[in-house]
Length: 381
Length: 195
View 1 (cartoon, rainbow over the protein chains, first blue to last red):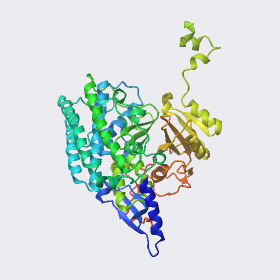
View 2: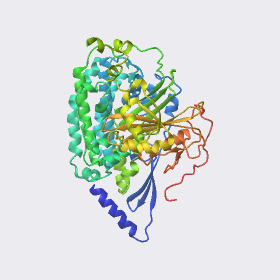
View 3: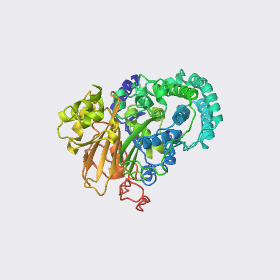
View 4: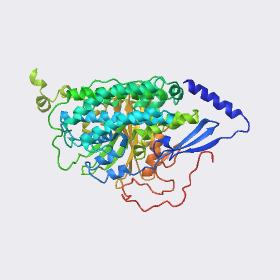
């Protein structure tokens, strides 16, 4: 808030100086701080940002169109390539969206395993965000530490699904096969260790003077504006709106586990950082409970050989690490969907970049883009 | 007393009191429907819901009533749909109304979803809702880019994913999966800020 007031007065001061002119600079698409192939065209008055234009689409592959030409099962691996940082979350959104056409009884073991893997992917995603975001602002050690823990999560994925990034974790009706017993042992070791590692990150950053100066009061968005721009996930919660689809529209095993939803106050970059750190701790807490409660039995229910949802349309969304990740599916009763629409959190959160950056300094744009936590694979689709 | 409660009895025999067994099963979206109908009668042309699920309720709106109804649903405390979470279109080349533009709304206060739809003909413009929800700006650009549906009074009517000079709209059903063979060899002309 303080930053906003300062910035607006700064604009007035600069524009009244005679003989100055605005500067247009191009950031990206190869700039390392734009997290992929995002191009931002910035208009500057001195060092103050006066206009922002994002150029996206470099990674547009027409995933929705592909989805309309293949069967429901065949589309699962394509969802891995959307949010490749947290691929199991994308898988989960798709299989649950298709399952919501039917009244299949998904076995409880599958629900708990889905929840566990989904939360592991949240930890993996937030760790990558923390690593790169801190690196953008200039903290090198956090990057190395966070990747050390992310490696452990990816090893768990490899143990359970045979792949590290594009895991293709779930199938319609449950999981492809049960996880090996070692997975549960290693997952337990990980959740026992992980909270102390989050403490380590906090030692480096939370009260670090440089970190506070770079993040506090930067990129402030009010709750009303965040809702207006349809921002979801940690950004919305950092602005003080307690909205989490895991609680509001419970799916998988979330009705059975206990967790708190962190909420920020100021809606700045610093609050988004705090919210995500608490979310990582809560994810570890959820996995811990799932391991305690994990029931036995099959991991998949009987599903028909060809999946033909009845005619109709469904919108189903889940709480992805980055926000609300949903699918709108129109079925015409055949084996392939008539229309698939992905509701991408990165695309919609990025649409508010202009709102977040106006009146801020050029160096803060990097911090703000980092705090939105975008993945261009899912933004461009 | 017990005999009357049984559903089969009520539906089969005793016709005068059909109201009582119907009472617990309110049709989906009833309250919202009444809310909109009271303020803007005739705005909702049709109402559907997948398997009567509350969160899959869809109101098909007349296109000239869209902005009014959207603003009303956003501001009224009983609906309070503050988030436009998704906006898309579906192409039906054989129908009279070629495009269905679909708006997915979320109410944080009431923890519920609602879908609005507008049916438009080929080359008919849809009123923009970017004045109601700012998030609609990019989503409408996306629908224009991929389907060619134009939005009237859109503040920034540019393409968003495809190159500016692409020429056609790839998500239409008559557009082949492998593309039409368009290739962009020239340097794309893009109007930068400040030009």
